[in-house]
Length: 306
Length: 295
Image (cartoon, rainbow over all chains, first blue to last red; front, side, top):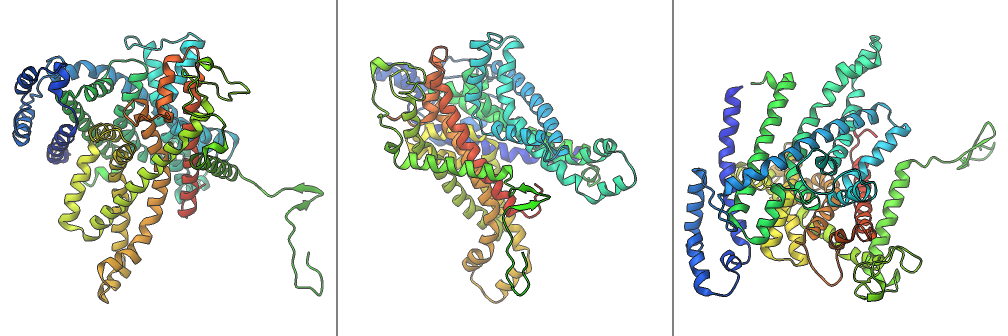
């Protein structure tokens, strides 16, 4: 098992290298000269000085090599905007986004799986139709629109919840809901299909004819098998939250990685963009690894193949 | 009714059972498909000939008509420049629909080609292609689209391109697995044995098998592309034209949310309904094409 993890981590290394390269290429593709933007006016001497300070005057391949070498050593440079070490800045913003991501994923899982099971068990009854329509709308709504609707209802009209900020739990409720609804919809639909497939298998018929109660069949047999594919989806949802965080943090004026990235892109703050995208990518890889590990823990067929 | 001496059997649409009328069953899915198709038709007409649906002009700024609520004269109210909201949404349909359809078209064709080549030839071509795709996929899609859109400039086609690039890896993967399962079948070997040239094998034997999963992904993908595109407009990273795009007007409305909720609410409603329509059609397509899918 440990060898498997080690293998996967080893395989991740070239992928991370590739991602670093891709990020470097894309970012240096961005139009605009960061030095010019930072200096503000047209003082050519100042701009040239800043360019040399930031290392932008070097040929691209040298910038690339410097970048790769520094990245390996964990030095991601300093933000163009405020000279703060990039890692420090990112780690400042990470907790806010992470707490948002975790809470909204938990919400997605709780609501999505529950509704999916209900929908499958009461197939073609009213509740099934209601859940199916709701999940359809859930996956079709733009997150930023839902966020604005929530603010309109709960902050402007009902004055129950705060619209901006990111200190307290109350300020987390609406953003987490806005972010989690889409995931809940995806899970609800997926779990419904999965449970329906399992219910129609031969062995369930056998269990019924043996006289096992419906509830026991559901909990002990059907759910265990049906929920397995949901793990992959959960992984995808969690990893996809970073992009969702970009809009949500903008709408709710929260601190976080998403807002950091958008600001950095607008300011052409290259080191921040590179490091932030890298973090998202590493995050993705880790989540995939975790999902695979979870599979191996839960599914004995996978576990025994080691 | 079967009549003696006649071979004609007529089955009436409306059956009488125990004296009660029973109507033909229209299921919810039929209603869904009908509504979706009708809505899409409506939006397509809006895209082609917006003048049919509104007499106002979307660029008509009228200082006297600022921030009016929905009324008989202005069905969805007016915005902060005095423009009629319904008109803006009708004229904006063109860019939203084109965005979704074009991105998916480009993305799926590119994904099809890449997936077919990778899946058919295998070997090092496949390995390298898959590694590159893995690398692209580690960067979250929306983020990739944002960065590309900013990198190559905020024109309409560039935004389309940015979104297509973000989706190509998923399409390529789906096509590749379809191709790999087809290639393992014996009729491909048979075709190869009799000397069929490779492009012909690909077009005639492999392509049809890839189409149905790709088609399903593409239909649902239009919805996702529209969400991505309007998201970009919302962040101010999309196209800025005279006629505001749905996402853009939505973000403008944020500043007026306390006094004029209609500026943000209605564009979002249109976006949602458009995506719902494509999702319903995509689901229906998948149900029809996959015989094992349980309703």
